[in-house]
Image (cartoon, rainbow, N blue to C red; front, side):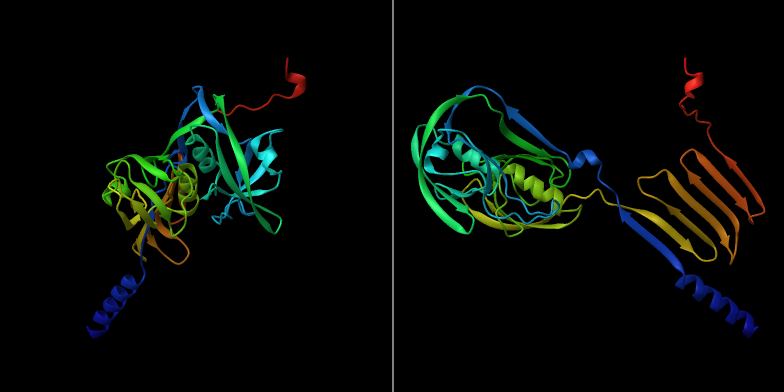
Length: 312
């Protein structure tokens, strides 16, 4: 009697120590990572500098490290920028004392000028940093202007550039983590993860590349009433789902997220199972003690190329 009790106690202990339960976060659809943009193509007056610039990005395309300034890739002949002495390859660091760490911020600063003016440009050429004066002119343009950017995944909100080129909240979904943190229309993001967030577009690019669902985010926010405050929020997450459960040798169940594929087994022995079921898309596989097996599925016709001699 004692040996029987010991046997069942041992089996119960083995079962408890061999439990397998695992869950994974649900993936966000690819469209949730796409950044939607509203633009304006109407004709307007805009300050003209004559530079085409690009992000002064790290050599690693997936790196979040953004060196200061924007890289000059084109200078229009006889433009204020050429007259001031800027050349292709220079790094524009500041525009009239304000940092220009992404192209959209420079564009926004130019849009904020309503008449011809003198500005100071600070730029780097090689190892030297120089400052020159440039005389901006006004011109009529219908070049695309970004009105706001929308992120439907991690922040669930829309953002535009304020007059200084910082991301400003346009609207937030009721499930947005920023909404839950008390942010609203008109609030401005001054820092993201302890650094300048860049323009609205650059801010969402950094979020998309560096944040996963549920990750913590730290921000310094300028409220519409003029007060600054630091917030810490978690990126929106769709939650998690069970992907594996089992108690050896009684049963084991497993499925793959994002794939129409799963498996279930009863009575897992050393070399076989009393019963096993496996699903892969439209096909199902059944096995009893690995002796009796059968498969079911849906017939799918596949188009194949005809041999040249049979192709009319």
